[in-house]
Length: 162
Image (cartoon, rainbow, N blue to C red; front, side):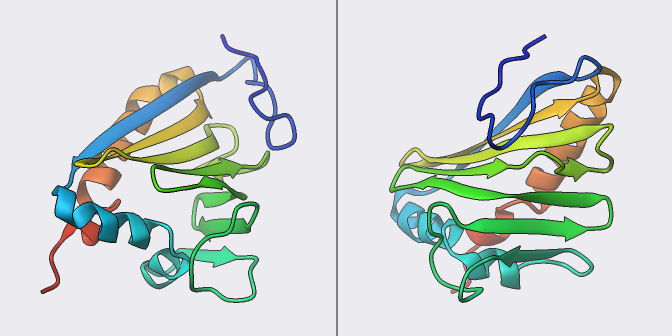
């Protein structure tokens, strides 16, 4: 069991009843499309405008569009979802989002998100989602992520609109 605090300001140690889990997934992207995709991933409006009711994304920023700013607060919320956090480092190869203590998916007792990271690897976009999860729920969590990221996730950003 990993009980090290990654960022004590943001979240707690891993509870004894949970384990730390990292989900990773890569998406092949034509190198000529990566710049456009990366730019879209770093805009507030991509997430504000792209949400399906009753889910919503909000940013504590003067506008709900435009590029992310490091340190900017946000929340993704809806039924069985309350993940609030802060945009971390943003550059040409990396974007991080640190989730705060109290964030949850389904229930605070099942899944507590810690961090969402995106990596620009020229011809591949890689995501890494780190959570605390109940051990018995880990296979369900993985299946849910495979389904979400495979069907919805960022696929809408990878399709040609021309």
